[in-house]
Amino acid sequence: MDKRQKLEKIAKKVASCKKCSLYKKATNPVPGEGNPEAEVMFIGEGPGFYEDQQGRPFVGQAGKLLDELLQLIKLPREDVFIANVVKHRPPGNRDPLPEEIEACKEFLDAQIKIIDPKIIVTLGRFSMAKFFPGEFISKIHGQARFVDFAGKKRIVISMYHPAAALRSGKIMEELKDDFQKISRFLKNDDVKEVVEIKKEKQLSLIV
Image (tube, helix red, strand yellow):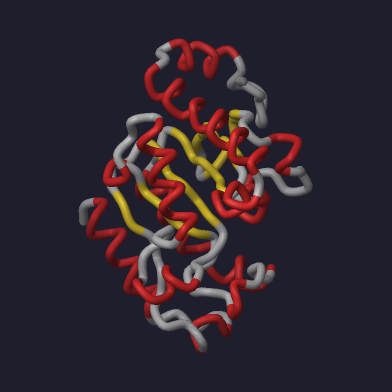
């Protein structure tokens, strides 16, 4: 199977998953969508109302902001892949519970392995915690770090969730600044040299 077929297979598994109770009140599963060959993968927290209605990630107000941020760095949405740590909407848009995140872990991990992105961007504290448990997003947002995942070192950049930026002008400006890092890493060949120099460190801060 090619990457797209593998991702479709995961989406079907998500649609029939009953490993936690989220599916009981969800309208649609939201497995994720985008380019199977994406160099950049965004990982949010969980579907909201509009995502639940459409079965697609980031289509509400936060999604519109994400689209604007992608336009800001001239990165088409169809060129990236977007997913969440949980694949069904938590009731009332509450935070996902640890057991719910754990239940969806196999799907997200498989998506990352299949897509094999150059850069992973976490949006919000729950997706950040997947790679940097115990950290605070206010402290490490915008920092690009090396993380060992599935036998490969990957660049992970933690950022605020767009929904937080909609509530705070300060966070909005910080999020816009952080997004500029994405285009820098995609275009800057020097990143490869930095990666090689610091590859012996598990969590090397490279910006």
